[in-house]
Image (cartoon, rainbow, N blue to C red; front, side, top):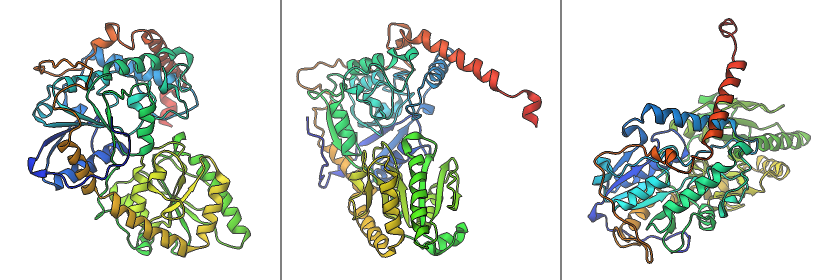
Length: 486
């Protein structure tokens, strides 16, 4: 196994023109993972590579029975969560078999992306067994945990995922069974994992799913279109958004500002402290600009919520701000941080996950400890009083983006991996046997895993009880028809 580290890929032979299939639950502007995949695809196509995207919507619909079971599982998890985290948690089911999909069957290389609710470990195994070269790009921790997409500090995935802090006792067996199933299905497979950050590579390598005798892991950072994400006219952006031209502006952005993992509560505390410190010196308070689902209210601080934005709206918000603030408690390689740096906006962020891969403290921005509102307030106060410092860090941020995060560079790194595949084509790793199955004539959800002793058979009864309890609770708390009309 090659040790997880950043690769300095040289020129690759694009004359071979491999045909690539990217497999993902969703595509488009539907989340960070989808956006990252779309940027990779654009970079590959810029190199003249044929790339197709296969999503769950491109496959035949599940049967009524399978859909009902899927709803039961999702409802049970929703009502079986603790208050430790509200980040997504998914079961190792369903596992669709897409190896017979015409696009996948015609591809020379299959790049799996974020596939929760679509391909579980069994589906990945079927792809490898069909003889395909498969690289699985991880956008969070889900591939090697018992269900959590971020572990909230838990290290259970190193062992057996017992006593999951994110689930109640009613679902205590689910993470353990899901992790054991993934471990069995992925063991011995000649499979390459791609992680955007060194942090995620290290977490994967420590997990019980990772097989050092068979798996390989490469760190390839995300890429971004530097022609679109570039420095712009701050005054013009502020005029369009109706913001004052002379106030220090802090931007916060996320798909959901209410997600505990994003640390919005700490950001509010930090901005409040910084405002008090600036006011004590006779300075005007900063203004806060936000985008994403949710609304921020900070006493004494003007907050302007832009709601959910498309790409053009995000770029305009970045042009309008002085700095981007993220107080994430866990994160991989946030698109929002990369977008800010590419637009020449320095970042104030937590020293967690992949953020230190992107921000060198005091150069491209400033790093603070997780959950440390006081340290963050001190940084915000200092940079609000020194605009030259902010400007210099913004120049460094843009230069780093040009060196490391051009989407075309990311594409070249992927193509170099395809050209220098670490395994013999279609062959297992040394000491392991992988039987190549005939490509199926059709592709369907592998629903039988639940009914034939699969990972969910034990917890299924508890799941149904939780789902029914949740539905009954919603019926009791939902307003009457007359109330809803008022």
